[in-house]
Image (tube, rainbow, N blue to C red; front, side, top):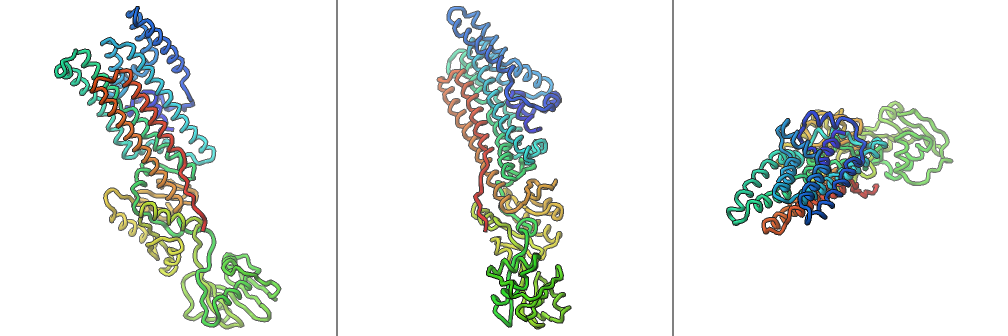
Amino acid sequence: MGFFREIDKAVSGHGHGCGCNDCVRLYNAPDTRSVDRVLCVRLVIAAALFIAAWILSGSLSAVSVLLSCASVLCAGYDRFVRAVAVCVREKNVNEDLLMLIVVVAAVVIGHPLEAAGGTILLQVSAVLRGVAVDKVRRGLSILAEDGAEPDTDELSASHTRAEEFIAHFARLYTPVIIAIAVVIAVVTPLLLHTTAVEGIYRALILMVIACPCALIVSVPLAYMAGVGAAARQGVRFRNTAAEDRLCRADTVVFDQHSALEGEGLRVVSVKSDRIDADVLLRIAAHACAYSDGEYAQSVKAAYQDTIYIELIQSFMQDPGRGITVEVEGVSILLGTEEFVREHGVDPGLDAVPETSMYLAIDGKYAGRILFGAVARPTAAAAVAQLAWDGDRKLVMLSEETPAAAEKFSRLVGVGQYYAGCGADGKAGIVRDLRERLRKNESLVFVGDAAKDAACFELADVGIAASDSDSADITAAEPGPETVLKAIRTAKRTRSIVLQNVIGVLAFKILVLSMDMLGVCPLWLAMLADAGAALAAVLNSMRALIPHGTALTEE
């Protein structure tokens, strides 16, 4: 699971996005850790040393300093060693190096207890964040047992715009913060006429408050949790960038056959110039009484009344072509155009290219039954929700005739449709719709990835069946409900990410204001930073909860 290896680097303090070869080798092995027991033991020892240092801080200050230093080393030596190694080998200044500078400087200026306490807090926060990440991993592992787990190695290869921004931001942010802290340490004594130690102390507080760890860990974790929530609903994201693009979906294009049609056929219309349409349907239903064919089942389903089998005196069936039956001495012929013509019956102008069956009574043409595709049970409800949720443009591409496509589009509630579309025609329509979008809008295509490959290449997000390797999102039966679930999950995930960003930044601004007023000690800044990171991670875990669609069959 490549994604979780990256998250593990973050929660264990490895240094985000360093990309060093040692990291790759270190995290290529499967990670079955729930909690690092060795680290927990170290933290208990470090806490004991800290308590002893605090007790002795009044009478034996030298011993207290030594104990505090021992507590710092016991709790965080691994983070600090990695930070220096990454800085030297990869020329990457990360937040671990930031905290190393804070801890060392705090000891030098006479605040060893705060350095020890802060190091313990940071490591405890890292352990708790690791537990949270493991919970998300276990959630996806449960999905793996059901065959619904997303490919996390593939997911880690793509990133949302927010994740990319955070990654680039982190690489530049830490060196800038160090530079600003140096300026504050120098300028504060000059402007406020304080001691140099006070200036350094305030600069250290700034460095702690400005640590970006809360966002660097929580943002990708939220997106992964969102992927897990979608997988629980049978929707598999192949890349997290699709979540970002789905939030900007303005146009959703459905292929009628692969995205909207259900199994079987339905009676669309009954036409007769000789007898009433209801009477013709009743005759056809009795003719189909002994047939289990797809057309016969559709006729009987449309009739919805009692069929008196005892009236049928003879029955002959030519599978896939037609039926010859005698009802109370009346000969009835029901079948395809070719079938009835072979029996001397001419449908005349009623012959149409759509799927139809023609009925003759005593050798004379009586009327026509027109069939059409059946919509999926929840298609109409999902289409209505898609249109209502975001005022989106919904488009259907059909290979049927204009009349058949119009009837089906009304059935499912899609406002715009294109009939008679071949593979090239579909691609041209998708390209045209894509060009009409504004810069921050995206187009979603739902169809058959093999048959409509060109459409998938043109669309911002492609949704197809589970056996597709080229779609961004897959599902067992991709359709409007799949789109609805995916968009709702993506929007909820983005909402959680925004909550984290706004909440963390607002909290840090508050603590920074306290620092400027001189009422925020270093230990409180470290506690605030650890708490903010943990709160953001816990909030990200909410994205793992599926967002139901509550659709009803129609």
